[in-house]
Amino acid sequence: MHALIALILAVEEEAEPSKTPFYILGGLLTLWAVVLSGIGMSSASFPATVAAKRGVIALTALLMVGAMATAVITG
Image 1 (cartoon, rainbow, N blue to C red):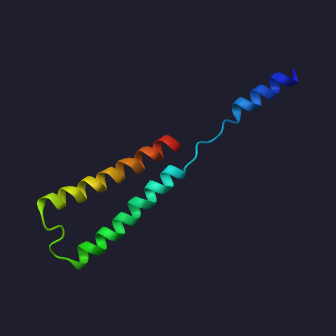
Image 2: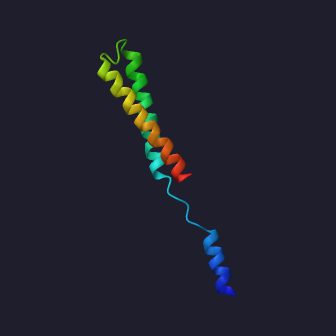
Image 3: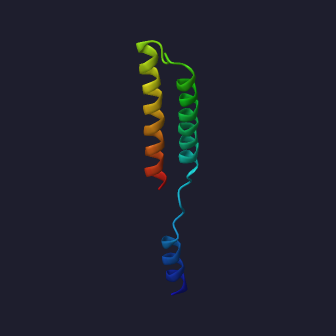
């Protein structure tokens, strides 16, 4: 009987997944937003080319999707 109670308690106390990936990607996204706003406010023509604009958008989207995915996975 004690073994059954111990098994039930062990199942109920599942290990919570690590939130470290979310903290890392969320921090990188935050850092990227601060750097990007600083560069954007100091330069009127940032990003200068169409390829640079696409690169900034792609990197931002990649960081955002990564942060969102890790939030859902570790939540």
